[in-house]
Length: 114
Image (cartoon, rainbow, N blue to C red):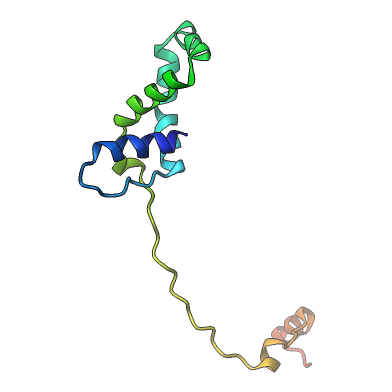
């Protein structure tokens, strides 16, 4: 709901006809987490209680009002480019399936025969 509020608030403000910015849930959560503790300290609990009785229309209007204050560049998604496929080097089957006993390797390293 928060993502869509930010997208809707900034789509309505943009008259160029560009699509609304895609909001990242992660970056939005980082923004909220950074401000939430300060709000809890600054606002006493009785200030929060009237929101439990608010109608959905009032909450939606308040969310859009708050979303207008969010900088869309800070919470937009960062799209990665396609991964480059690296060719798998060729290895002969006999080499790939070869088993080397640890005991034999240690014996050979000490100078024993095997």
